[in-house]
Length: 387
Figure 1 (cartoon, one colour):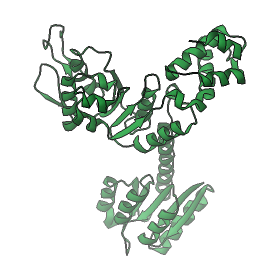
Figure 2 (cartoon, rainbow, N blue to C red; figure 1 turned 120 degrees about the vertical axis):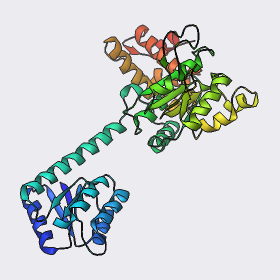
Figure 3 (cartoon, rainbow, N blue to C red; figure 1 turned 180 degrees about the vertical axis):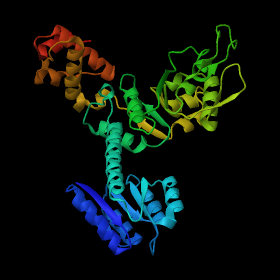
Figure 4 (cartoon, helix red, strand yellow; figure 1 turned 180 degrees about the horizontal axis):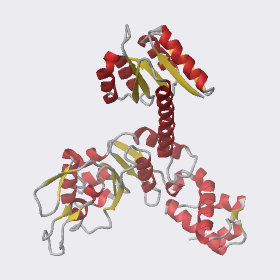
């Protein structure tokens, strides 16, 4: 049931509006407030799907109510009610975030159409918000352990901000999944997520890869090319294995983070960029700093928020869920029926030393599905999962 609040100091108009809305649709629950202050108190206590608010009122006028609502319940649509002399003010409220305005005396069709459209728009916004909070199954983080729960809580708190995040942890633990969650749950989710594996790019090419180059900047630069910072504009740039980046490239990344500007290789023109940077590494960057291989000032720029991804050996309670997840995923990829694992098989796998972390576990599960019996047993594990 849609909840609507009518804020109007003229009792006769207020009663008419409440009567029209109540009789028009049984699904509307309509409350009323005699002035702006009373309206604000109701809005603080209740979640309304729509507020109709007069502009000229004693104690607190409609513009002040609008500004207050945008602070305490910004998702609540507001339709302003204007007298003939308030039209300029009514138009101005649209700039302040009002959904629409209607004139006194209200035209019945105009009023009801505006209310319907405003309510439909609210529903769409809520659905879009919920969709944005859902992360693609491809990047699910599987597990109910305290360690995974802590990471998920951190992501919920951090994702909506533009704070830079440094993700640390051993190889194969799923640091890239954290980066994808951060992006997909952020306000930048409609923008690109651009990934750069700093360890996979030769040091002499990393600057060109990140910042782009102009034609003739070096021997193989046959045309102008945008770098990853430009490509990620409006979205997120994920710098994986940041600990393997050269010191010269680190200096330029530091400048880009400080000034939100980059320069293509071979050019002195600044290009403004709007990018959120998320970085990851399996190295101890404090040790790298002490040994002169990583800039301390860049570390502090990147590590506004630190998220440590645990080794699989530190979250063994998640292994049964991971086995079930990988078994279903592999069956889907291969077009086969999902294989079950006996309790004994799962228990034995929980006791293994997973030096390769989740990546190694997935490989072992796939091997057992291919070579094991219809229901993977403890003997299958002992035969085919040994290192």
